[in-house]
Length: 459
Image (cartoon, rainbow, N blue to C red; front, side, top):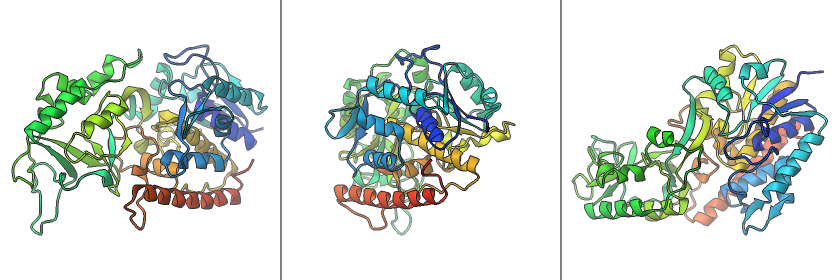
């Protein structure tokens, strides 16, 4: 009998991976330290316990979250099926009774003859790899200190212990009549009048800046949990905390206008926000230096006061919280395999799923567990796993998260900002999203056919 696949963490990603592997006939040892060792946020020892919201986001197909759910359904996700079975009214979103949902997943795991659920703490990647055919690390954002230390030996400085992500906005929602393209100390235009530079710049007048700072300071913040300590803010100051240090402090920090010239006035602006492209297709932009602890609604309200962002559509809001994750673009391949493990002498293949791998969101975690299960199945069956098309929701996220050209990586959820642009641009937002969805479903159909052809789709 082959050695089992060893999985650390029975959260969303680990539970989905275990059930998918068992479905395909592979024995699994699933390690979960709860309730033997508690975390700061979990309340039970159940598998797949939801610790924040009970919402799995929109079911609308013409949305990135809806596209992701279609993938989960088409690929036979156990956890997505359980979510539907335990759904509660939530309008256009999928929300679940978190207790009955977790109990259902625990029941599935415990009743599967190929899954050995062990209530113990994994403290070492090397020990987990012993006598295993493959390893999956799915311990989430609150990975224990001992396992994180073991992982850090493998990956070096590419392990982070907090999530400090600035908001991302869609390019086509920006006012390019106000924003201008220029890098600091470079000419705003070339000789032929074409805009230059790697950054978009939002120029503030003094009056605009004063009004923005006043509202920024008055905005409602997220109340930090016990595990979100001051160390986070010391490592990366939120923009509102910088402003709290002094009204002009942002103007000498993230909003400094030095080296910039507003082409509308020919002068340096009073202050300026820089926006950096989030992807090679220039479909979305990151608000540079705008890590924030404001509530999402407040971010939308206050940040739309920035000149040129009055109609900004947010692909991702800023977040700041305790979150252990790896620098995926440097460490993971398209199968979510940890490349550094073999280099450090760990011969057993090691994969990473869920938030530890640098993705955000419940359905994203479920989908990553399913993807890892398919990758391991292909490895053990000695077949080539088909490449997940970038036109699918998770394919776009996977391409972004494993692209070595992605710099300053922060955890990301599925969104249209990381998807490849349409061959034919569509100006109407609603129709554009429908086109993304139609294209994604077609790509998913082809992918399913390739999975079936190599025996990976059905167990």
